Image (cartoon, rainbow, N blue to C red; front, top):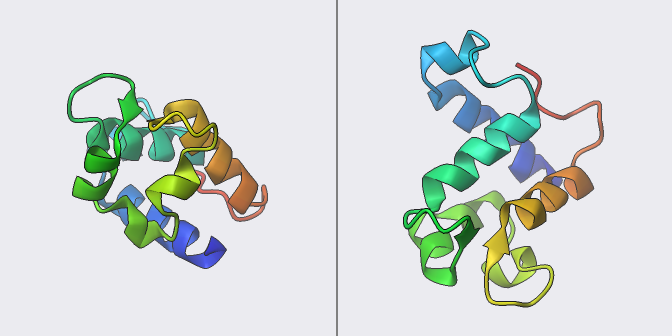
Length: 97
């Protein structure tokens, strides 16, 4: 799963707008993860429902919605999503733009 998350982060980084890659608003792997999360949060609620998680195809990164809902409240928050990123990436393999 760790390799899938690293690869997924790299793919997302390559698809970001040039302004982001040039350093305008994205300076760490956490920023890339936040970009993924924000793009998936279709209703702007600040959390991902199972439907939003599925619609964004986030399970392809190796973590199911149930696994991403760390507190079991039926929603994945940005804090939960970032915690998963931190758990599965050592400082050496985190994305750094």
